[in-house]
Length: 380
View 1 (cartoon, rainbow, N blue to C red):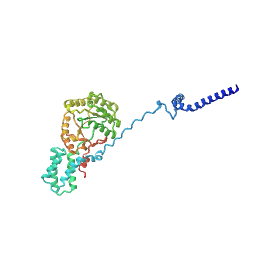
View 2 (tube, one colour):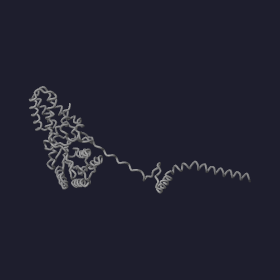
View 3 (cartoon, rainbow, N blue to C red):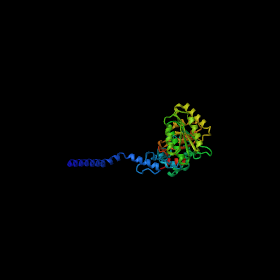
View 4 (cartoon, rainbow, N blue to C red):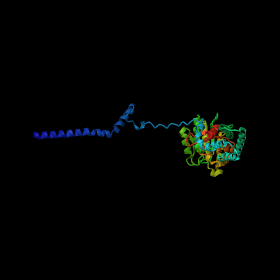
C-alpha cells in the first residue's frame, strides 16, 4: 500500500512539473501574439493619468499627420531672357548669323541684297518691316564703306533693335493701389495658354506678388485641374466652377474673392475654341464686361504660338476685334527659326510683346527684353 501511495505521489508530481514547464515555454509566445492588448491597456492608463504614451508603441490617434509638401520657389524673373538666350539657337543661326554672314561679304551686289530679304521673310519678319530694314542697311553700308566684322555686327544690332522697338512700355500692369489687378489671358487652344497662366503666376510670385487664379476655361476637359496644379505648386489658390459652366460667372467670382482676400493680382484663364469663332468671341466679350463690373481689366494678354507664323497673325486679328489686347505672349519661341514673328505681330496689332516662352520648364517664361533678344540672335 505504501508503495502504491508513493507511486501515485511521484506521478502527480511529474504531472505538476510538466504543466509548469509547458506554461513556462508557451507563456512568452502568448504574450508576443497578444502584445497589443497590454500596450493598449497601458496607453489607456496613461491617458487616464495624463502621462505620455509609451515611446515604443504609439496609439493610432496620436500619430502625427504627414507634412504638407513645401511650396516651390520660382526663379526670379529679372534677367531670365539673358539666362535663356541659348534657347534661341534656331533663330540665331537662321536670322542673326545668316544676316551677319551676308552683310560681311566683301561685295554686296543685288543678288546678296535679295538673299538678305529672303532671310528676313523666311524668319517671318514681314514684308513691310523687311523692306524698311533692307533700305536702312543699304544706306548705312554705303556710308560705312570698308566694313570690319565688328562694324557689321554693331550696325546690324542697332538696326534690329530699332525694328523690334526699345521705346515701348513692356511692363506688366499687375498691381493696383486699392484693388487687385486683373489680367485676362486669351488665345486659342494649343498655344499653351493655360500653361502660360500657370507660368505667369510663378513669375509674379517670384516678384513678391500674391496671386489668385480664375479657371474660366470651363469647356476644355481638365483645364481647371491643370491650372489648379500650377497654382498649388506656388501657393496660388484657384477659383473654379463646374465643367461646362458659365465662364463669366467664374471670372466674376474670382475677381470678387481676389478683392475680399486682398490679393495683388487675379489671373483669368479663358476658353480658346476658335473653331466656334462667333460663340467664343461672344463669350470673351461677356467675360470682360462682367469682370468690369468690379473695375477695369488691367491687362489683356494674347498668347500666340511662335511656330505658327502667319496663322498666328490671323488669330491675333480675330481676338483684337473683340478684346482690347494690351500685350503679346509668344510661346515656343525656342522651337522655331522664325524669330522675326516678334516684329511682325507687334506691327500687326500695334501692341508690344511682353513675355516669351523659351522651353518646357516651369520657369522658362521670360519678360521680353529687346536688347537681350537681339544680342542672342547675333551672338557669335
